[in-house]
Structures are given as structure tokens and as C-alpha cells.
Image (tube, rainbow, N blue to C red; front, side):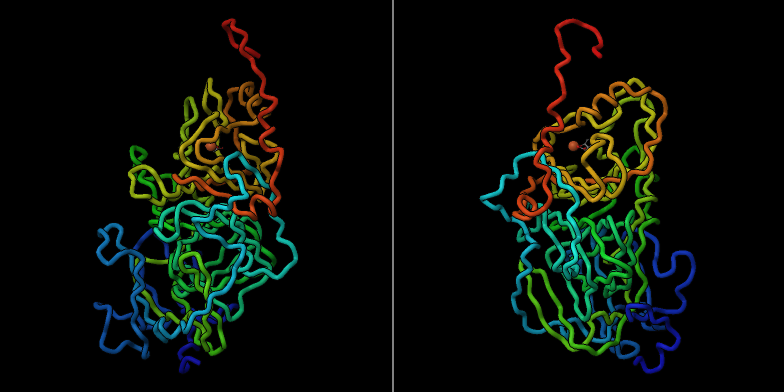
Length: 460
Ligand SMILES: O=C(O)Cc1cc(O)ccc1O
Ligand SMILES: [Fe+2]
């Protein structure tokens, strides 16, 4: 298949070929965030000292994948050089529009749906129908506009089937993938990412991949970012360490397929889906170098910084990744993590406070109990507190937070996240009518009583 050269390489379960040099505790990945990586699956496949040799080793084609404008400032400029069996023009043909009815893009405002409100859903069941990464994507909310490259969509994915001789890329968006149940394998042009709950992956705009299920069905959440790429937040006075540390981000080493098979490539472009057929696998990048790549991150390596004396800081202190919007300090999307941690604040109400926020907050529960909502927000569940809509602890959480002893408490076995965007989020018809919406969610604040009686003093 590879002129005998693959003999020195590993052939992986999905059929991809990787260098045997890939060993050790983090086999298959290179550490760092936004590094200028280089990797080759065959020795000498990567040109040294230049990007476009007159002829590439092994008869490979050189091709650049640009994730930012050519002229983006140096600190933001991202591109990767790929050395591949065929150029990408051979991985597409004529396009035919197809229907992927549950995957929606902004602007998508359904006149029959009210998005104004506080909403919560039980986990969307995976079911036993045949669903792939493409057909199993269920859009919950959309925000902004995919055509002007602002905003986002939130989805739940339900996957029961591996993609076989089928590939996908989104020209519209970068995908942030948050597994909640089951493992996923992303076989991408740049290598393989194995992903499980408590990890996240970022799949950049334009990268071709196939999603496989290594064991059983899988469910999780996706934030589809139409805007500027996710980046690490500035730490300000926190300094050079903590929160998400760059070395804990892992980017895959090169792996490729040289496989002849009738294959379907599905492309998401300006909110619409198209298919094209080719006669080989497009995952044929033998070597690459650059800083535009897919990566994963283990949420258990996130080092939270918080209140060590009193009060409850803004949740931005827990930002893992932020996608800027162009307006300073106002994210297109913040990805925020509420993980297990010590609660030590003295003479303070420790759970989240009551609040109204110009940003809109979509939360998902990966596992465990969320302190503001001890009941009802279950693992796999979702809540939405839209732009300027009041929310906060339910009655039980309020009473607990108001009366708990002010001793150090370890909030154990818990992990939730938030996709927080500057744009209002609009519910899809699926979210409003098909998904298991909790009609009684807003009642969770009903029993909060009036304690004020006009007389001074602390009330029970
Ligand atoms: O609404 C929520 O539960 C998310 C949240 C958590 C927090 O600690 C402070 C503010 C906030 O919006
Ligand atoms: Fe909130």
C-alpha cells in the first residue's frame, strides 16, 4: 500500500498509519497550545527549511490550510502546511445539497418558539436509531449569524454509529466538543484524537475528519463557534500559571490513510449541507507543520483559582477558553468550567448569587451536582438563562447556602460547564418541542419566601 514503507509504521484500529516512533505516556499527541508543531508519519516526509520544495519527498503534494487571514497579526496568525498524497482539490467533486434537518445555523428564529425565558432540559435520550456524528447532531440554540461569522450554536450530539467511508468538514465553524457519555475517536487530516468524558476537543474550521465510536453509543455537547477562534484567556494579575495551562493541550501527531474506497464527503457551508463523492480517503496527510490544528484538553488538569477569604467571584474566573468578539472583554463565547474544588469563603453566601446578565448562559452537566441547583439539573441535562433574564439558586440551594457552616468544604465529584455568549440564544423547534424540556423549571424559585418584615436584624 505504501511502497513497503508502512512496514515500519503502526496501523491503528481505524486503519490510519502512524510512525512507530510514537511511544510514551502521551503517545500520539504533542503538548502545547497554539505551538508551531511539526510531525511526520513517514521519515523525511516533512521538508526542512522551506514549505514548498519543487518536488516533495515520497511524491507528496504540499498544501497550506489557512485558519486566519494571511495578514492576521502575528500572535493570531494560524496556518498549517500539509504534505499529502493528493491535494484537497481531489477530495471534493461536484456538490449536491442535502438535508440535515436537526443541525441548524443562526440566524434561525422560529416564530412559534419563545426564547425569552429560563429553560432547563433533562438529558436528551440517545435512543436506538442509527445516528452518526452528522445525523445525530441536535441543535438546541443558535446565536448571531453564521454568514457574518459571529455567534454560535449549541448542540447535543447523539451517536450510535461510526462514520464509514464518510467524512465531514465545517467551513462555518470551529467545534468545541464536550463528551458526557461514551468515547469518540476523531480521525482527522492531522491525526487521531481519542476523546472521553472529562476531556474536550477543538476541531478547527475546514479540517476534514471522520468520527468513530470505539465502544458504545455516545452523547455530549457541542459549541459551534462561527467567530474568531477559541484562545486561552489572559490571566491578568493571576500571572503565568493556573487555570488552563498550555502544556495540557494535546495536538495529534500525523497519521494517514492510503485507502481506495468510494467515500462521501459532507460539507457544512453557510448553514447548508452538501455532499460530494470521491474514490479514496481524504485523510491522506503524511506530514504537517504549523499552528492551525485540532487539539484536546483534559478538564481534570484545569487549576481553578477562586475566593480564598470571602465572597463569590464572577464565573469568568473559571474560563477555560475564550473566543473573542472584537469588542474587548466581551466574548463571542466563553467556555467556563465548574469543577470539584474547595469552598472556603468565610461569612459569605458561597453558591452563585442571584443575577441578571447581558450575556446569555447555556450550561450543561457532565456529572455530579451543581451547587445552585441541587435538584433537577442532572448529568446530561442543559439549562439556558438567556440575555438579561434573572436566575440564581433555587430555594434549597439558597437555604443551604444561607445556613451552611463556614468551614472548608470540598465540593466533590462534580463537573458542569457554561457556553456564555454576548448574543441572545434562540431555541430551535427541537429544543422547544422535542427535547425533554422541564416545563416546571421556573417554579424552582416559587417557594423563595419574603423574609423582610421592616425590622432590622438577620432573619432565619
Ligand atoms: O448562572 C449560573 O449558574 C452560572 C454562574 C455561576 C456563578 O458562580 C456565578 C454566575 C453565574 O452566572
Ligand atoms: Fe448565571
